[in-house]
Length: 247
Ligand code: ATP
Ligand code: BTN
Image (cartoon, rainbow, N blue to C red; front, side, top):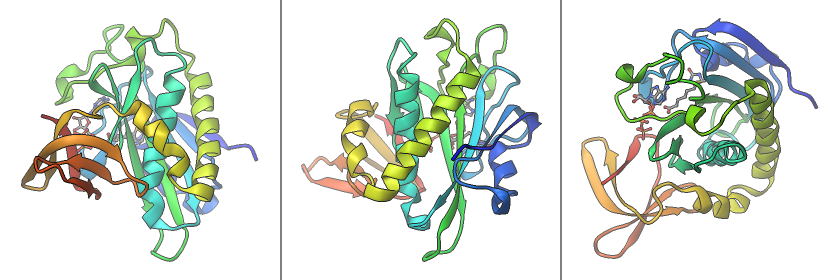
């Protein structure tokens, strides 16, 4: 079935817009904005959303497995975006667990999955995707507002048709989420390992006040990050409060 797609010049946050309209949505429906006045990231952080140059997209999905499956779902979203962008990007777009995309070791895009629904019931999932496309070119320079190194597709692609890119992402996401609902993360594991920006690298995990160092070993079938610690043991880490950094 086709998606209903709403495109607006200005929205506070495309995720918020979709969250407020859940009863009227069907899986695959999406909304796009040229500008977000209150774009958001994880844990209350801001997503810098200048006008007319990037992609701000949110898609609704009803997940029958319930809220617990949302972690795996967000990893699948990362894989699909990276694979879609890699059809046009000269340098390889990679994934950073659990919800970022990296280009040339800098943050290119972020994924924010928000949901409603109780354990045991279906979850109503809003998949928010922000991709830097033209930011940095044509004087649209926002680097002073972003407190980490970031990149943009502008230098990797001569011309990007944003409508076509959005349609490609939405279509690929719908197919991937149907597969994910049937088979979980298993069919996506090797694709993740192919794209993992930090695989085999020295990293640290920030968990609240705690810092854990080790070598990144990819993910397991539950979507947990695998870290090989100094004693050689490989430990899975999962949970929304964990941040991965290079060490
Ligand atoms: P983690 O998710 O691992 O904790 P993170 O620092 O990337 O790491 P997020 O909440 O995922 O945190 O993303 C929000 C952060 O992304 C902001 O604090 C800012 O550093 C960065 N950011 C904001 N807007 C943009 C943008 N347009 N492009 C790249 N990075 C951005
Ligand atoms: C992150 O890296 O923390 C996730 C950033 C997600 C940004 C996108 S832009 C479209 C959607 N609407 C929002 O307010 N946030 C997401």
